[in-house]
Image (cartoon, rainbow, N blue to C red):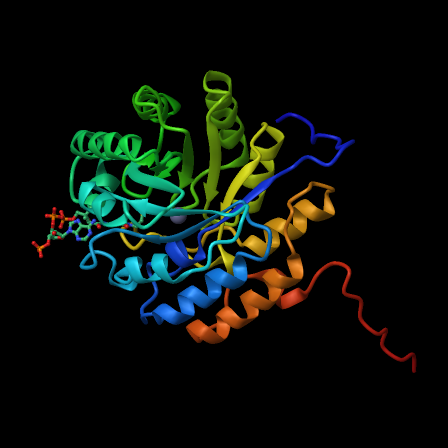
Length: 314
Ligand code: COA
Ligand code: ZN
């Protein structure tokens, strides 16, 4: 591993919230459309570069996000925040194309087994379908990001090789996409592997927008984010409170927690543009909304700067 960077001038990091997509997709109780809209509007004031609003997937596959059109139409648009949506196929793109989204975030898996479980088709069929979506997006001048699920490992087939990942990166890059999200769908990545992957993609495609998307399934999420930053990555997906997980990946759990990630980066002197207090209030309220405790340790412990009254000496 390389040594931690010493930061002389604050390095700008870009935070992207996924709680209303990755977070809500696997919830067992439907979150009301008005509550989704209200949450996105509050989060829009917290300093994010991008918010993944929802997904235009089949409502039979992901019933929690069946209200994608209503949510996308209902939110306020804050200047400086990009509003992206997840799209698995042409039908999803046709639903989203006239809603003024700032980006299409197309999804497929590097692992054939996960692609079959998640999207009900093989990778070649997904690639063909997504190529048509990219054509449509280019006609409509909508930027395209590709989210590659199981980029580091698949719960059914094991560790993903860098060669397999680069194969799909190369094919999509040739179609003129603006960026990629490298997803650790079920928290199988380790910091060493993250460094290798980040350096490989940045070396080969330094001009593309690279996002790292970690899940904290095995407690390595934040360590992986730090490894990515030290390898030159400046853009991260995360989920408020640490909610999230793919419903089609055995053993999936939440994304890395936004407030924990921001808290760490801010303490280290990075420039995240984020308002940590707004995040903590939103995360607290999210617990009430979904009716259970979130995995956010920061919510439990409070910020490092929150001091406590010393116990009285006997
Ligand atoms: N939006 C709305 N409806 C869609 C749709 C979309 N994007 N894609 C397909 N459908 C509908 C079809 O119209 C069809 O409806 P019908 O039964 O009323 O005729 C039905 O879904 C089945 O269509 P088909 O093309 O056979 O799709 P499928 O059942 O093979 O599902 C996906 C394929 C990709 C649409 C589905 O698996 C999916 O949405 N997966 C989402 C996975 C996901 O989001 N995972 C978590 C994030 S990584
Ligand atoms: Zn995810």
